[in-house]
Length: 190
Image 1 (cartoon, helix red, strand yellow):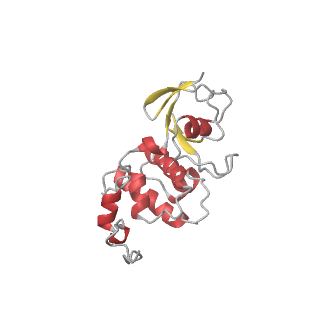
Image 2 (cartoon, one colour; image 1 turned 45 degrees about the horizontal axis):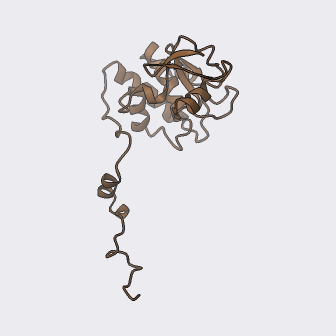
Image 3 (cartoon, one colour; image 1 turned 30 degrees about the vertical axis):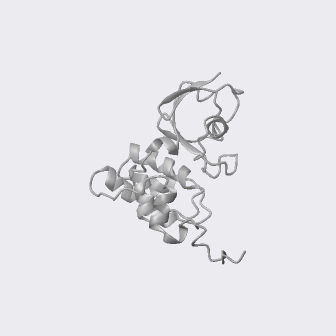
């Protein structure tokens, strides 16, 4: 049974050792941020960090990940404070969001090893496919994340994950629950 550390927690998968890491993460660990896009390593939607290197989790088996440190988007920063996450939001480099976790992971690996990447460095390090075409904003976001990592710039933190129904109702009054006395379809003429 392959053992590894996932998001700083030791895990042991009681699965076929040839299972792609992507499926172990998604199905056994319920870490669904890494997406299944193509299954053959072309799109990068399943990108995770393995010992700090951005790897496509659909191409590495859990046997190959044995004894290694795996970081998924969920483990990068729980409060979305990582410079790449913040810069992606600040630069509007997120559209549908499907490819975003893989892009963020590839960007995080790049910024970790080179906080001053050139446009060419970024394009080489982030081979992810984005159907929405955020590439110009993506380059700006990674450049900005590098400035944040070098402490030359700050970005307000992205919103914390999740929001309660009550907080959503306060922020967006149209989401308030309907009570019997406020239901316009309830005319009281029963």
